[in-house]
Image (cartoon, rainbow, N blue to C red; front, top):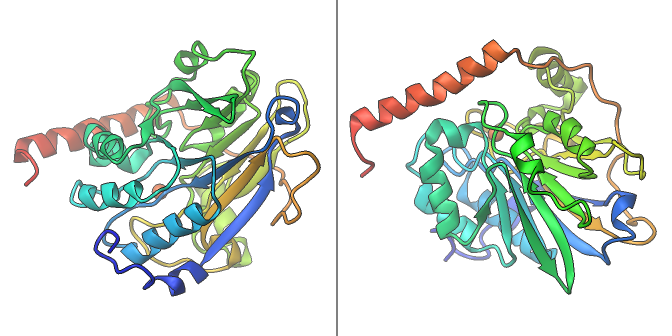
Length: 309
Ligand SMILES: [Fe+2]
């Protein structure tokens, strides 16, 4: 049994996933000898996403035999009711797990989500850098807290970076990548958009790009060449959903992404090219402050109801 789901019962769910593979930026070729990262995002463990889908994501991640798994936020939906299930899901990952939080984690209670992840064996990076060693090679993992709710602090994180050690960035919100590239982080993994979930007729670009103001909607953006001050960002389509279960169109499928860092030559199958960013619209300070206030309001509401049973 896995998180209440019998093992082997989820092959149909695995078929609903896209497993996409990409080579890392050229910058890693001189510093790393093939480090494999599996990227998951927006698991949203809860009522909307079947546990079989969570289990399928973990099985696909484990099957890739990664050196580590990076998960970029939104572990829950709107409450703390599924923290035990979250813990069970993350505990099944057979590789070191590094995580950053998303807006839904802050809305639901960041300390509690963080604690569930740590108890499951994950390392949660809140504007922090950790150094991961694999086969004698060191790689810095920089994790930003959620920018949507105003918790990201790039300056704090950058102070911990050693410029002589290669690095990778994790951020729920992909637009933070622009700033991280300037600090010499050549690849940032992100989530949040769910690829729009409905990707037929470019509806996702309309909803996530034009309406929500994101530059990066789904997939690979930026440059993997060794250009100073530039880099790449990958926006994963995610595993789950918090509100609407629909996922329509190939680009909107649930997703597990594999990045092969430091590989010489290119990965045989790449599922799409790097894309130009949309114009985007940076949130105003006022809007970010409002989003931050919402987190505090929800926390006060929870506290007024007493501890979770
Ligand atoms: Fe999400």
